[in-house]
Image 1 (tube, rainbow, N blue to C red):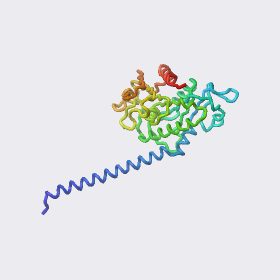
Image 2 (cartoon, rainbow, N blue to C red):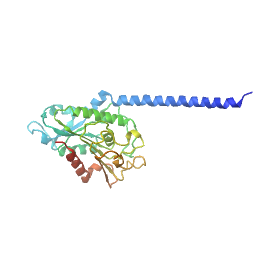
Image 3 (cartoon, rainbow, N blue to C red):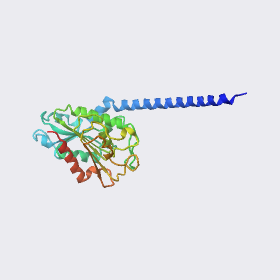
Image 4 (tube, rainbow, N blue to C red):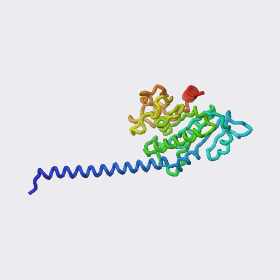
Length: 289
């Protein structure tokens, strides 16, 4: 005859043991997956590819017309195709640089337009290409305004930003006092969450600084670094309670953050004349002499 007083505690202990086993297995799987993602994100060969296939633009203002063939008022192309041209830039040029981080769809028309806008206003641009990686999971579907398809993509983009920043600081013609970072959409998230210092300022475009994933929320990096954040009031990408709003909510202990909300219902706010004016004002005001 079974004593129910012993059976119930035993079943409870067995259930707890199974629960702990499953939890440990899930945690181990998550940890292994995270480690694999980090290894892929920081793979040196992959990072070199994102730089070699980066778009670089140098305003003709800083170039001798006898030595360079320019179009649209700038020297521009993929880094791997214009290395010889870059080597001809005088080492004492001290050209201000913007590291540009593209959105989740890659180097589309929006990115090219932003790069040309900056270069036409006398800022060199270095835009690493995340899609130059051999392993690049899809992170969004622009047709349906769906993001979050690859949670680990932020690690990829932060590694690309860090690598571009490190290389930029070694380029002899770059003004090391004036290296900015500007990002749109997924690139805006990257710009907001870039944890390293050494930037003259950051421009966050098309991002709210709010997310259901804690590693995506808020702003990282030095608290005294100047930041301009711009987002649409009715951006179709940010309609959920956890990702709507604007970066003003990240003002805590950040006296140099300006959050601008424009009353439109589309994503690429940087196409607006008033936003372009604000971007140029931000760059000029914070540029160090």
